[in-house]
Length: 71
Length: 139
Image (cartoon, rainbow over all chains, first blue to last red; front, side, top):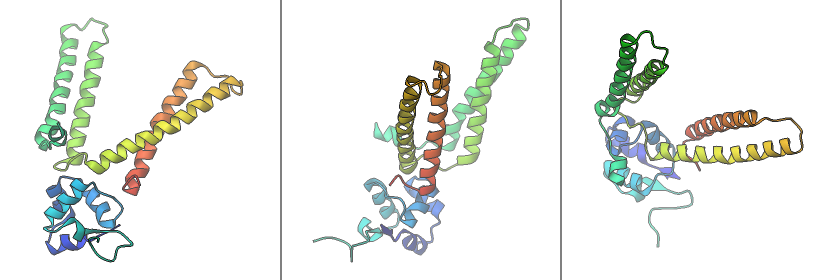
């Protein structure tokens, strides 16, 4: 799993602590999310996407996808 | 019910009850000692020990976690899976103890078996949770 959380976070000028506070998780959870080492629940993925002003599809992708969405 | 479970207390409320309960227990223990100094009851000792435990854990958690949540979905998941792995390992361990005793490989008393089981359960739970915490997720 790859994420673009760090890109969106730094674009918005947020620290990991600030993002963690917005979505009510521990900072370590944000760290592992950014590294792609933690698979979040749909609720948390949605909360992170909302906090970063984007969508779940834009933030998360899986290795064999060439782009977001299906069809 | 889910909202109650997920409710985030402010740090002030979250740890104040521990500090308060600990202080009350300590004061109660001291009062018991002062009111009846000749008594050989163990209750003052229990009150002081329990109060100290509440006070110390409350203050250390307040210092450690501060404004951040103590738990989130990731840490709860790691905790649950760590305990599950520990339970499974402990089950195999106790099964092994049974056969060791059955075939009289090593003479075991009930106390020895129970003590060893408790140690294995505790250490394995801590070890699995530490490992999963370092890995970041249970998968």
